[in-house]
Image (tube, rainbow over all chains, first blue to last red; front, top):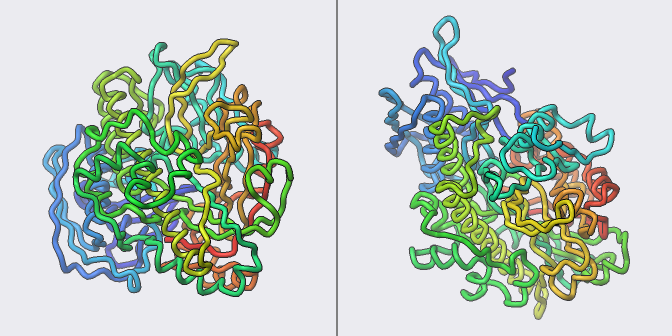
Length: 146
Length: 455
């Protein structure tokens, strides 16, 4: 059940319910696109304000399977947001097997403009699922502890 | 299930509890080495492997496990309450200015800047020393140590097991409040239930206290994430599967189990140091408004930890690894670890409610030892999701409504205020009444908020 989905054209992410925290889910024609969209959902947990894609950050991670890789991807974004004090609005993901290379674009947090609502602590293994449905659309989801 | 799952709640709380609480409490009861029972406190709700409000103890000599999910992402998140020596009448004339000053002086929320930067040497010293380190650096008072669990320093911390990424996340975050349900509140003692113990704790009606709720910040979150991943991968590699991957744990005596315990204890020290520093910042602000004033620490409790404690089980004393995930230690009267001035009363148990409804101070009961390894609830617990709260309430309106009730809220985000709306939480009065009825901890005082700073 979706609580909030982006209403932008072609946007493919949503939040889903969890009592204490937030579920994020991204959809896409490929796994990589689903991961990118889930990253949009992660940003939307913090703010709905516009974020300028001014600065670029590269991340990479590996994991034994796609689902753990998804958790690692979100945690890599959470780490970069925390240490750089940035928010990100554009994401590009390449996945080779279970190795991910990602690019994030964003800007430093502006408290007045972005008014961040909460701070993600980490992506969890709860409600964790990365799978394609029958028509080939990929979905990547998990609960994020905020 | 190796042991029963026991939930402490009344009929209303049970009815409103999400089904995941039962599932998770039962899953925990299946873990190796679990002793006596898998417990859920009156404020229990859906957690990560363990229910939030979950308590479970393990015996290392019986292949007992340690679980990163059983501690949580905010290691040693906890609460401290400090006495001010002031009355409500002293605060009211300066309430707005005090709120604004606290909001400026206490770094809170995403994008806020801490005033303290730690180099490698200081980081290691903080991870080993906890609140003792903070006091030695000039933040806080030596007299605070006996009022903090573990006397302010968690032994067995192993900074070498804390990763570079965890350290980087914390390097400029000491003395910051965080966001979400973390807060600093100036509160009034609204009601006394037990005058004798209130007197021992130093509480009287209309006294003003300062309460801080926060944890181990980015360092704790990073350690939680990394070791949860390591335990999931290690379990999978050993061919062990869990009904819920978040339940992933490791034998206490295993390599990853020992590394996690060392890192987790370092994170506990980070949280104890952080609350000591924030307490010092609050003391400075109060001294500015009330020259000569100083805040004194009643007690500092943690509610996301795994601690080695001696407990009586079937008449035999055993050393157990007690996980409390969103649950508070609640030692009863006479316990040897309590400071002498508080020993006859039992340990203060500080229970946060929500912004508008207030909090409670309880005292641990001796009966809690047999009921739940001396544990009690930790707060009201959420009753609805953040998004449902956002749909139902406007942060601005909540702020205005609470102002008319004499409660000043300061936050960088009105959306954050809505997500933390009083109505989004369970009834804390019901939760503490059940805790008392169950013999876990009894009510000593109710506090009402005057000022709430949140990130």
